[in-house]
Length: 153
Image (cartoon, rainbow, N blue to C red; front, side, top):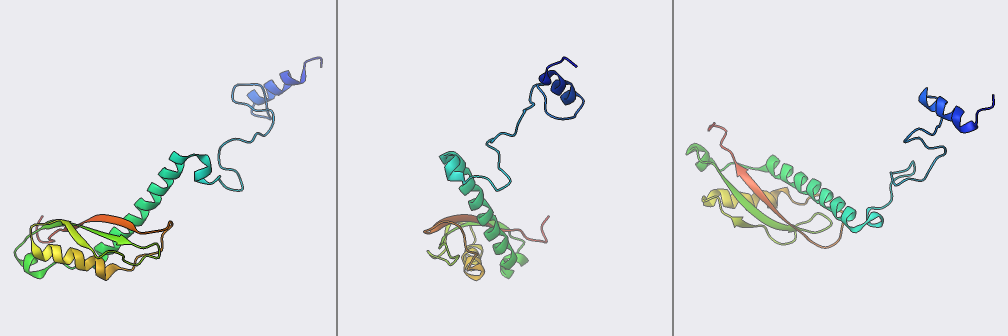
C-alpha cells in the first residue's frame, strides 16, 4: 500500500474507526475548555461574568428554598379565610451566612389586610433559621407571601 498514513486515517474516520482528517476530527487528545475528568475550573478563573452567573444561580436556589419553607409553615388567617379574602404581601429580611435571621422582617408591599401582613412577617420568624449558604456577610431577600384562599377558585 503506497497511500500516506493520513489517507488511511481519513478512510477509517469516515467508517467510524479511529481519528482522521475529516472536519471536527482530532488526531490526538487536546486540552479544551470543557470540564475535565478532574472537574471544571473555578468560575472566578473563567471570568467575572461566569462567576456572577454562578452566584446568581446559587442565590436563586437559596431563595427558592426559603420560599418553599415559608409556604410549608404559612398559616392562613382564619378571619380572612371565612370572608373569602386573598392577597399577597412582600416581605424583606436579611440572612447571615450561617442561615440565621439578621434584620427583622418587614413589609415592603402591603396586601391591604393587616392580618396578611402580620402573618407574612410571622411566617419568616417561624421558618428561620434557614440553611447555611455560600458567601460572607448578610444577604437581603425580598419574597412575596401569597395567600390563596382554598375555597375561592
